[in-house]
Image: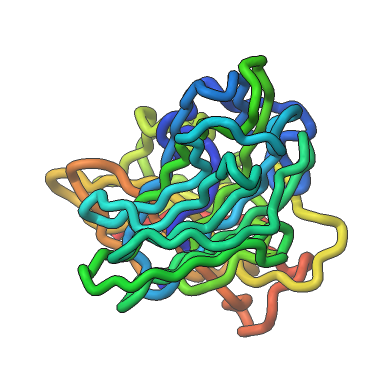
Length: 332
């Protein structure tokens, strides 16, 4: 079972960002990925985008890299300014990070029986990359904690006797983040949504398929996995078919204190007949290490995450030397 609810900032991962990927160096960490999301707009122009995922069993954690607008980010003038909003399965807003004009700061807001706005010490610096982490806990009360570069800047808690649910969607309204009618530029990258696991200090390196390796049992070209387009696909007509491949892309920071896990992500959809589940696997030393299969819907594709917290070959902690060079997908 993976604690990953969402990883990535590509158009297959995030609704509303088509055409906005950009390779300007400040917009992303080149140790982790090859691009970021760039916005250029005036203060009142709303450009929302969103992430959807299954409801977490524990607290929801959101982590990402944010570069505030490159001018007037420390001046909030829009009354409807909003940075991040969290919604439950009934499309009810349960929590929010809101820029507030009276303080020029980003505040945590819990929306339970009443709306509670926490105090804040965070004023965004113009054009300076920062790591944002947000924890949302929903039970008898709703609590939201807002961290920047690992430091807690704002927190709010509200009673929840009305039974609002855990978040299943995060919306970035992306409006009012600077205080001028002149256009400014800002960036987002490296989204991670985790179930019960803190995102603080965690970084996810995205590597992508390079070339077919040991197995090529599915119909179609590996190019369908490379192009980040859910409309181009591989297909499997029998359970147990495998496709494996080498990887390309960033290899992570030069110095890493620990590697917490290896994750294989695929976007899969069941057919009307044939396999109804999918899994990832690692191939190491000529041995396949399969994750548990996950049943996928037939109506629409969904992301499937397979996680190995330890090296499955010997149950040891991962190191940069033991990371797999070949991974794959498996129909079930």
